[in-house]
Length: 165
Ligand code: PNS
Image (cartoon, rainbow, N blue to C red; front, side):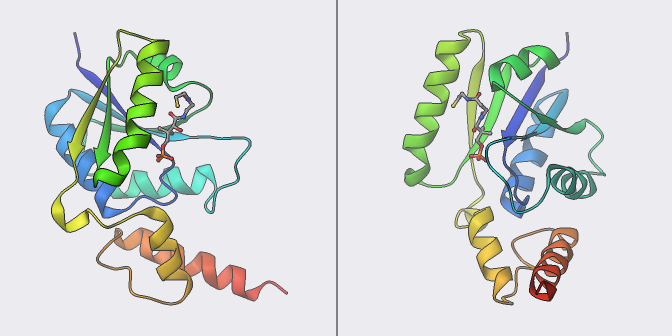
């Protein structure tokens, strides 16, 4: 039986911190689903398709990683793809409270699912998608915090936004 894990998130956009967790998880599990939440009530900066394209490009050399989106409850999605584990990255103590709520709720919804936390590599512990967007918005250098394709996509997106009347 294959050991399948899901790494869920907004990935708006994927950062090197996410990528680090994905790469390390791919060593531990037979299959890793990187799953983007398609939240109908919250419009993201990048579209779901753009996010999936960026993640797919960033993980193209890792054969056991699959990239897709999900809607609705995470526990239902995990059962659909046959995953028994959810993997989340933990950066700092400030992440803990939210992550504890998430894990407790998922455990209440499905007691068979386990959530495993992986400490983010020190060099990425300060990175967040929202801060990355903020830096890119004002022309700051994000080359050391996102993959090259994401850096380009951020530049293009802000150029497009700035061209709007
Ligand atoms: O990257 P994020 O935004 O911290 O990821 C949050 C995510 C996608 C893991 C979480 O919002 C989620 O699982 N949403 C799906 C809806 C759900 O299952 N809710 C119940 C548990 S909170």
